[in-house]
Image 1: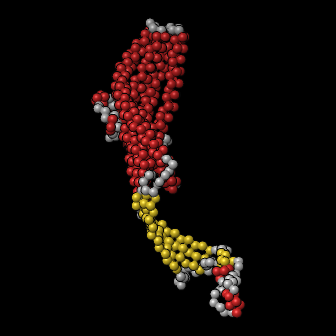
Image 2: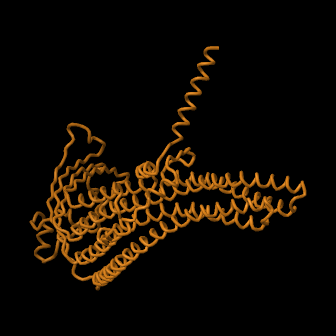
Image 3: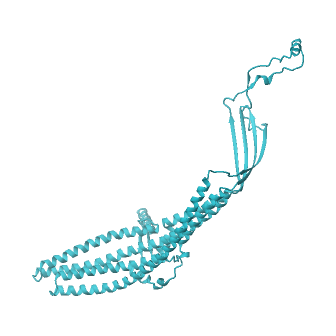
Length: 468
């Protein structure tokens, strides 16, 4: 029995620990901080920087000494045969050694020369050749440009990470706000249903006593049914909103989240009119700096194409040894080895490319001109974007204040119409209008709070306000 209890206790603790691992309580700032470390885009951006660092070293190493070793083993299954003229082996001499030679010389006749070829096999059946080569690039214009380009690429990757962090912050703010909107909507709709159910039941009793029309009851029933459908829809959206927040943060979409901030509190905290008067400096904006680096890459491409017309100089030194044998005796101590070494310098001078280099350089210059145009367009676009973001943010604050006031007015109007309806001095149509107006104003108020939060995040990105 004790073992069973211990087993159940261990299982319970394990399930509890697993549940705690799959749940988090987060404020908005904590959600942002978590996303900046764990979101998929942030991790990918960090990997890109690491890759860019490796690319810089790869390019740098191209101009550093390179050492390569090579071992070749060859065994002839059938050795090649060479044919040598038979005359090369003629031992005939002009010295007179016989009577016949004497008469031949006297008659100015040439001695007989052997005809045809003799098959000869050169070398051994097996051989081994081992060598080590040290090479060094002395000068290459393309290498110098490539080195500059790799450093620019690293800078672009770092700026891409900065841009990713800003976008991640905005995405988390919007996702966090959407969750709070669904929670707030559920709370409001449930309260509306509670009130409307009481009205419906009261109206039904009044109708049963013959003091009002059946139409009044049916009208309330229609409105109640619509509210219940709306509640079911918002509840389904709530699950999706939580999953979207998990996705933006980089956590499992099944993670249970508890949000500690409220929509009302965030809306109030994100009202900062000082931001509207913030000075915009386009040169500090991340998008402008990315465009500047894009232009720099185009400039380096022009230099690269121009550098291809320059000569390149490299040097190498080689040392090797060779062994020959009719059988595999290369591991024996008495194997004879023959050393060789070679020092060389190579100079390559481009002379004529049928104007292909000229064409490539012209294309690179056109790309640079387009980059200049894009840089100017980015400057103008970012300035306009900052102005629009300020206007949108100011409008969101004004809408929030207006809707906050309107929802109070709509609540009072609906309450008065409800009293009049049950006193018999107002129709169900008047009550329906008041109810619909209230529900619309409630949704406008909720949306205006989200707009304040979202528009402030968009303005911070437009002004390139750094992460805290």
